[in-house]
Amino acid sequence: MNSYDNPLRDPQDRRLPRIAGPCVLVIFGVTGDLSRKKLMPAVYDLANRGLLPPGFGLVGFARRDWADQDFAQVVHDAVKEHARTPFREEVWEQLLEGIRFVSGTFDSDESFENLKATIDELDTTRGTGGNHAFYLSIPPSGFEPVMSQLAKHGLAERHPGTWNRVVIEKPFGHDLASAKELNAVVERLFKPHEVFRIDHYLGKETVQNLLALRFANQMFEPIWNNHYVSHVEITMAEDIGIGGRAGYFDGIGSARDVMQNHLLQLLALTAMEEPTSFEASQLRAEKKKVLAAARVPDDYDLHTARGQYAAGWQGGQPVIGYLEEEGVDPASKTETYAAIRVDIDNRRWAGVPFYLRTAKRMPRRVTEVALSFKRAPHLPFTITDTEELGTNALVMRIQPDEGVTLRFGAKVPGTQMEIREVSMDFAYGGSFTESSPEAYERLILDVLLGDPPLFPQQEEVELSWEILDPVLEHWASLPEQPEQYEAGTWGPQSGYDMVARDGFTWRRP
Ligand code: BG6
Image (cartoon, protein in one colour):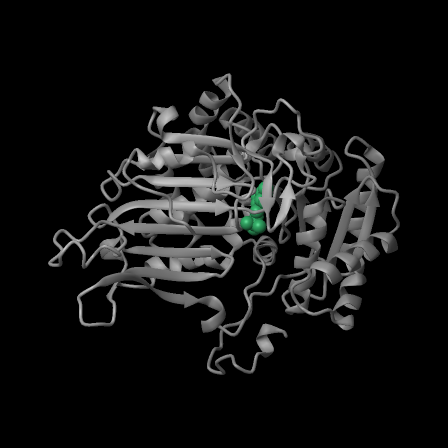
């Protein structure tokens, strides 16, 4: 259903939907998985929700020898298989009119001349107004040639009243130095406000809910600090292995893949001060401040852990270990489990460890941010009364099962004073009738609208590498393989030891 036709929607709500203006979206790397599973379906879902203008063009650029119709068929199949909203023939027909394909390679002038001609044609026939977004869904090695070609063929020229934007996907480099080099390549052609870096976690509703929870309510702020919080756990667990992604993942590893971006962004949103508004510059300023104050304590053997999944069981099925995966170097030292402790040197958080962990092949898929609180300073109960009292915790469930849980002690019914841990639960599904848009819907729409708050800035990217680089260098210097953990378990012993040393245990999400 188009959310704007939703009969349950408050009729008093006069907010206008945010609809993109006329434009062309050019996707490089259109034959990749991301494009098929996420980008094309998101474009269709936006069209289906009435958020794309009639004057919209979608251009795919790739090596394949396809005609427009072949590419349209690929988009059609991807939409049918992966779109969130139902397939509607009339929406598809309208989208189809603006679909084009350019077959080419990054080093071919002719390909980019064709691209220019295609975009010019769409500007005229579809009235796309000279507004163009270039989405680089390609490995970073392709950035330089694409940028040079765009420049050479006048594709990034600015004309009054029109815009050109570039969208780049992580990895934003593999360390601080390469992130800077990559950025220099992009910013040679595009101004900082024209560059949209995608961290798809920021497009997730539940991640934005972190801001709502913290800053729209009065009751959390007074306890959101080191007087009350003992430690924070940010977990991103996946039950999948690396599947067919060895070519990307091997040599990169979990820390570079998701900790440098998704997990450190979650940390920034959890720990930052209140921005004066949610305008990009204000939000980014607060994120940058907290990232600049964050560091991994420098005894890395004690405060970090890495692991690699070995064969095991997942969902009742035997699964192979990382080193047996197709395309993985059998001597690979790439980690599929990464955990680090981050300390934040400011008044609010001094003394509160933030533990970040992520892994492939864990028992289940779950991402959450959990604040654990200190024990009450005095418990006027006997030790037996409170045997089953855990620590109070506030858990923001990013996915799946989106929502928030508060855990606290309550009296067990009966004649004795016995206290046990219970949960108070908010579930998105139970409180809202509208289903959450996919992260890429929100982010692509924001690119087309030129709305930057949900896109990390280069300085945030660099600050995140500054936090991680010393850990990665340390890991690289170790002669041994990462510790093995059985697939379908919560990770290696060193991960448990890392928090146990500080007197904690990982929450079982
Ligand atoms: C991507 C990583 O950024 O996020 C993948 O490259 C990971 O390795 C994926 O599987 C997880 O995304 P989500 O939205 O399913 O949590």
